[in-house]
Amino acid sequence: MHEDIKSAFEDLKRSIAIFNERWPGKVIAARVWRLPLLAQQRVPDHIAAESFEGSAAVELTRDALLAFHLQPGQAPGTVSRLPGYIALAEPLMEEILAINTCKAAFSAAIEQTRLELELAPEARPRIMRKALGGAFNTKQLIRKVHGFPDPVRQLTFTWAGHTAGGERVKVAKVREQLKTLAMARADRERIALDRTPEWQEHQALNRMADDDILVRHKKIAPHPRAMLWFGEESRYDAMIHANLPVFVVPAQDGMQVVDLRDFDRTQRGALRPDIKPRREVLATRLLYLPTDNPERPAAQRNNEATLKRSTYSR
Image (cartoon, rainbow, N blue to C red; front, side, top):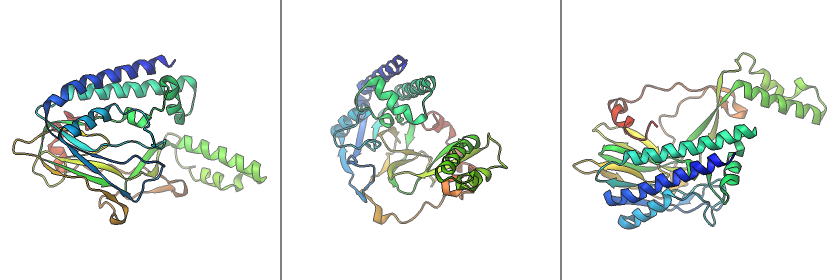
């Protein structure tokens, strides 16, 4: 049952090995920022970004692409990050897409095993470690490698300090969870089922269909991100998580780079201006209706073909 996971993992390692043999010989410029490992599942108020350029950045990137294990001193549930960029003389999209395809196949093998064993989604890391052994880190294994084949005019690195993530869940699942909690409380406190707060929340969903979708919001820890410009528009064309260096081809007249600074929580008081308003369903459980996706900015629509050739929409 775990053989598919092992096979997918070997395919992934081979695809990265092939890529690691090719891309260093195409490098025009390279710069990365090494971030300290987190010893606990809490982001400190200050994170120092240590800069490396040239051959040092190349070696750190080669290692980061294969950094699948928890490192000494790294807390479980955290990830190692190496934001930065590798400027190439020519794009290597075929190799990058092959890596991401292998990552998707690896993730799918874990999910298939979970379904066969009838385990909860939270069991995926345990399934992976049982198949591979060792202190493997699921997030570091499956995170995407980003590459853009078209010339980049500007590349800006910043910290995302106020980002919220969302998990999409069906109303039927929420109902089932609330019913289980309500029955447990009623039994524990010896009260009527309809007097429990969980059952009242359950009843608040009466007008919704089982197949309706809710979004469970959660705050995401501060993390580095990169914004890319291809044309002359003022708004960025693409924004990605900068967990690993992004592979780009610079514009003929040069690529302007805004470096990543240290993270300082005390200096990050402003929220993003484009935060969408939320329509609450069960705010105490951070459950909201999905927000409508606004029309994409003109800059992104104009560069639709560019983005399709990259890893941005895959």
